[in-house]
Image 1 (cartoon, chains in turn orange, cyan):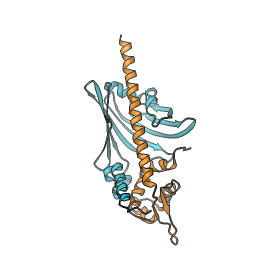
Image 2 (tube, helix red, strand yellow):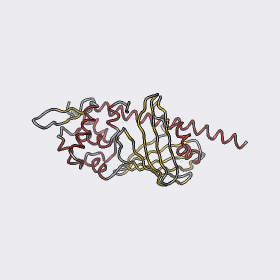
Image 3 (tube, chains in turn yellow, brown):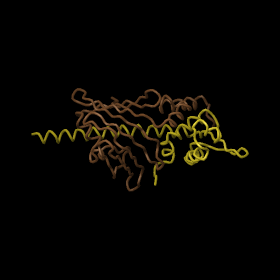
Image 4 (cartoon, chains in turn purple, green):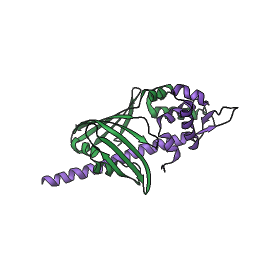
Length: 112
Length: 161
């Protein structure tokens, strides 16, 4: 259903942003990530799959574990996403200025 | 002149302010009437809001659906909790991407400011679990500060390459 950039959609979730912030401090396993977030391991794994699919994290195999770390391009993606949000918000309000001017203009006409 | 300000407050709040050159009644209506919302709450260029439900009364439903051209995008649902024409709205909202994000509780005030309006939006971020997750990961200063921290770490070369 989504046609947004997969990184943007991955970043829209606050839990996934929190996982990224944790991984910025260093590599972690699913178990290590599940603990502070008070989440089940399958729930964390689901989020990690989204982050990995979006190219925001990298995983390696170490025995039965698959520790994750932040991908180098993650910071760029976060910046792009924040810029996109800021821009979208600024654009909305610029458009709203126009709508408000139109509304007050019409009101003025009604009165006259 | 940048009219929009965005700052964090405490552990869970984000405050957005914006001034408008119209009286509070007009700004309030533009935030609550579907036909008016559809004219401006569109995000990036090229996006539209084909579906807009906004029942501005306590318990009233909110549903905004965005699309990019013919392609469906994401949608937001929510409920109005308090509605005081033309000065205050309290509502909850969540984005569906398609997984729903935790509820965002939003109080919006419209105050007369000269011949215009000062809007103050106070967002309270989600539930205790999300709050704790944010605190545990140093996101207590809010998203922005947390990303600044990420950037600093990247600059210091502390991020695994």
